[in-house]
Image 1: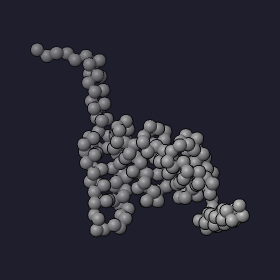
Image 2: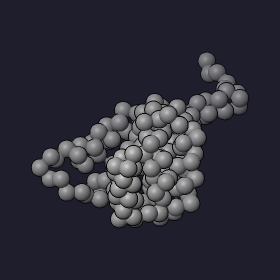
Image 3: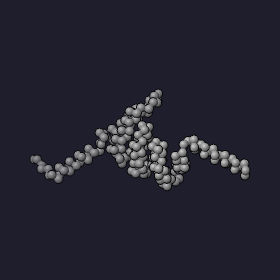
Image 4: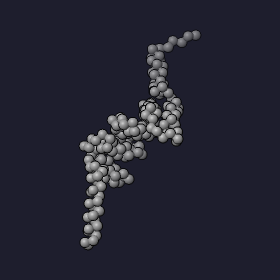
Length: 188
């Protein structure tokens, strides 16, 4: 006996098939993508004898992290993979891409344990990598407003106070302050 399949049932089966295929975005399951990350990390960091930076291996690692994040945006590992990806991108001097990921972490993963670090590195990248001092200033102020007691707050305040200064200017300022403190101690 042949059963008649209604159009409604056929449509439901088609949707189940489509949604099932969506769980393997990037060409693989969670296990496959995790394995690709492990392989790429081993290729990048595994050879302790050869510490030379390999941009191809670095890009492969970024791609593996990105594939996982695209396939499983709500997974607990995704924010960490994105954070690691941004660091590798900075090493590749792809600062715009790194900045975009730091922003994505702040927006999509505000409860991630390294969200404050990500915000700090966003400001740091603007300041040091991209020389976008106004953007760095905004991010540093945002950090201090959002995380005033964080372990990085003093570093952020220092960066904000010395924004745009050369290392030589900062050293001269330290020396000037030290001399003032010594003079105040001697004259008190």
